[in-house]
Image 1 (cartoon, rainbow, N blue to C red):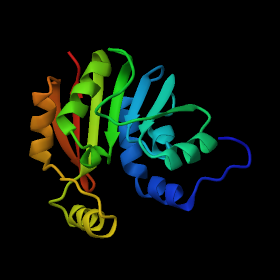
Image 2: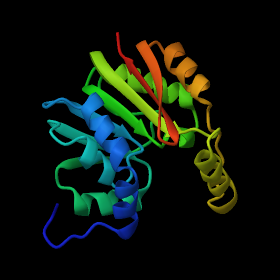
Image 3: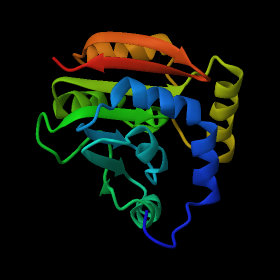
Length: 189
């Protein structure tokens, strides 16, 4: 972090609320020396926690305000303005690509999955975690996003997420429930 910068209250609350998930992700996906891309990673507050030890951390984010806050907070992270459906990196650039609670915001999820697969080196791992709308908290998040934040999107069911990742050409696809969401982990061939 840069000197004198204090993360926003919102970022501190989100990281604290997700501490078990972030620790699980860190153990599951980020060996030392990994090049990691976080799709829709916001300010990078969670990325620096689960990506600790990575050789390179890149956050792709469409919101300029989040990028500005993240850039001020995390000098170890490269922020790139853009969307998951069109990512300006070459094939095989990363060993890990992550979508943490952002997948439901992607306007073309199948295209985003294709981009994630393209960007992974052979044997690289893709991790998608999103709210499960069949849980009580998932239903609350969905209602909040639709009615209060006025976002238009669809939560995919855990089964739909797994099918979409498989259809995108990933291998060794498996799904697990974790907290109030679903985690789909897969590899690039």
